Length: 193
Image 1: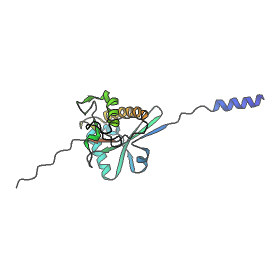
Image 2: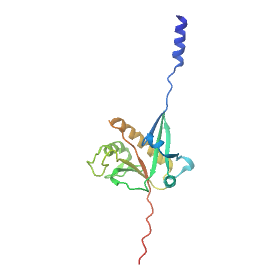
Image 3: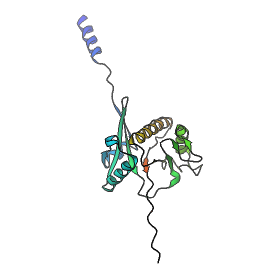
Image 4: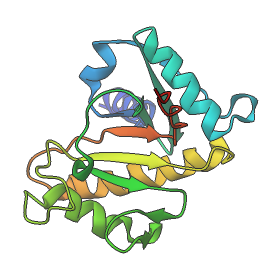
């Protein structure tokens, strides 16, 4: 009996709870499996916003999607980034963020993100300034060209953290899609005849 107890005690002590890393994917895990993707290291070479968006655009031209990832506690977050320079998108479906504000209605400070993100995803066509449906809700990021990549990453971390809290409160799961915007130079006017 003492041997059995000793074996049980030894087994119990050796079975320490191991922490498992969890990975969260934005928009979905499937979107990372269905495309050619490349980890885009924002911290590399201290890139600025303009260079980041231009690099992502060049990769998209080659049908390669870009994502960034970071680890917080035991959770790895992977966020797919898209350039908004291509494609037809309905403006009201975007909640536009800068490094310190939210560009909707009267412009709000970034600390109002939890309330406005909830309004954006739960609008269901009530307010024409917000997404028509949670399936169409998209987040747009617009920053000055000279903003450092670390500032963009900080904004994206806050966004995903806020989104995760909102998503836990929902019965249906939500999708976080992020597009990066840059002010593109206007084309020259057509020649006068």
